Image 1 (cartoon, rainbow, N blue to C red):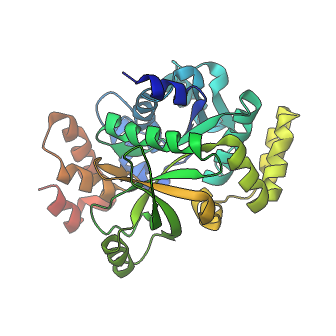
Image 2 (tube, rainbow, N blue to C red):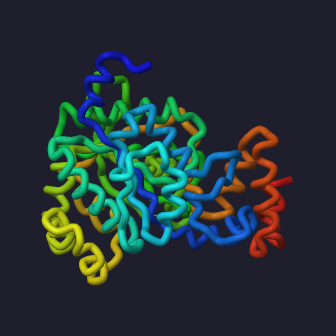
Length: 327
């Protein structure tokens, strides 16, 4: 149960879940599980819940479903509606096509500002593994509390690396900020996207964090910074506030761009990072990242179908590395 302070802080907070990815790198695995290729966030990789449903359940520890928005692609709408039945229909935001995280997140932020221009927003990817929802959301609340007092800052969650992974983005921390919340909060010195093995080891040794791409900030501050850094895209999508029916035409002319690389990395002075050191987290973007998660956990019946599916993916059946991981 949330404390009175947490309830007061969260009254202006919304959750924005990004579910617009195509998940092409895992289509072999999702085909092995479901019989057809599908975006990983909609696939029930573990038990009865998809990664999207697990994310939605996680966010309910922070805000009510009425204040949860989900960005999906039009060609995934059938799966999305089936898995998001607890949300109001108006909270499912449909973009015409996937253009990476930049346009999708901007699309969601502009919708939210029409609903609540004074809102704070916590952004969640829909395809990550988290082993302890309560502990993870406690850090999101810490970020929300910080932003409620420092409205010009955007807070990111940075996971303490379990190993030097070359497939993740890293956040290099700067000076530590005094915080009365008990959270370890730092200025952001820089970003490093998918570094070499040598560089990843150096970053880990020097205290860098994995970028979990969970962000908390004022929707107004997000949009002010986006107007400065990505003015053309912001102005183009802002037209939808006056005429939502133009969405197809506008998306037809937009180019893909990445929110971390093409926006966050350009505004480090507006960012802080909170250290997450008590949660097992993984971006399940490849079969290898999933296999590593399985290897680290106690064997359990719920994992067996996923392990069998991993073994059946053609590219990985003959992989000596995967065979060693799943022994």
